[in-house]
View 1: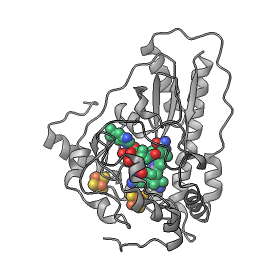
View 2 (view 1 turned 45 degrees about the horizontal axis):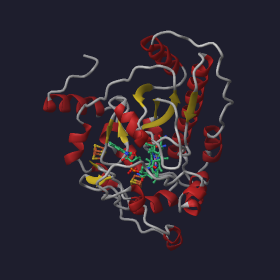
View 3 (view 1 turned 180 degrees about the horizontal axis):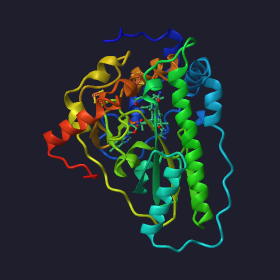
Length: 324
Ligand code: B12
Ligand code: SF4
Ligand code: SF4
């Protein structure tokens, strides 16, 4: 187990209110998520803490340039006047092929749900496309980064940069076909909460550490979104046993320095699910260059362990992989 960590007093002083009520911990009715972190500072109470987090990641060698690339948003082209009137199945296939040829490592499509949209924002498009960008495990496993080694956090920024390029490229392709499309690249939060549509679209399952676990990439995967009114076909949810595996695994709970990852599921905005205690995570996250330990240590992230876990869980749960 990593040594337990105590936040600096000046970091704690910036955590002016608890994040757990904002996230709806203990609420039994469903509601939209509240803007929480990585939104413009006038939309939540953690503006100063956000600055500390940003500065601590940028102090790592090479990280500032890598994040600049992630925020280098290209121009959006005008929506073409003539529409591609092909059937939805055809358009979904073309969009998928385009995304996979433009840096996305996987893609899922889900009908838009108001519960995916942060309060105070509007999304009019009826479809959410979620793109997965895989981490480089050899680089990711070097987190947490610091002034002597920026490799882990640079890999985070590099995948955000791929997400920026991939989501803008796909949005522009859809616009060139005569449909509206908006990219949601990160690293900022923006209107779209990415994990719930990613799960609905079959990109993975929610892990105990609060991040998505993918059958192809484990937890070492970043997400970007595109919303659109192009007619599409939803992709099916995937289940490969990650949720069941988390019931007994404790690798991330033990590795998390502030002990932010809860052992058991909790009620959050009307859903019983895994939950991370923001009040514990964020001070460490802010001081330790965006942390990322929980996704790096997750057993599903290790390329040589993942195939064994997949076959063990498939046998245990009598699951058949979609590829077979
Ligand atoms: C704000 C934010 C943070 C905040 C707060 C996170 C938190 N859990 O409270 C901070 C700064 C602490 C943070 C830290 C990290 N983050 Co972050 N974060 C975001 C961001 C911008 C918004 C999410 C948010 O507002 N959460 C607050 C509320 C809504 O949280 P919540 O109710 O607990 O819900 C969480 C999950 O349970 C799930 N979820 C929400 N509703 C529902 C409903 C159902 C039914 C289910 C099953 C799941 C689910 O989504 C939420 C993700 O935080 C998203 C990008 C995006 N636009 O979605 C990235 C994102 C979630 N973060 C990501 C990552 C990887 C991290 C870190 C590992 C840091 C790093 N170095 O990369 C840590 C992990 C912390 C943790 N264990 O959750 C990735 C996750 C990728 C993946 N594999 O799933 C995302 C998607 C960014 C991206 N573009 O890839 N993050
Ligand atoms: S990002 Fe770090 S502090 Fe936050 S839950 Fe993951 S391991 Fe814990
Ligand atoms: S480390 Fe273990 S408990 Fe944590 S998310 Fe991965 S499989 Fe689940």
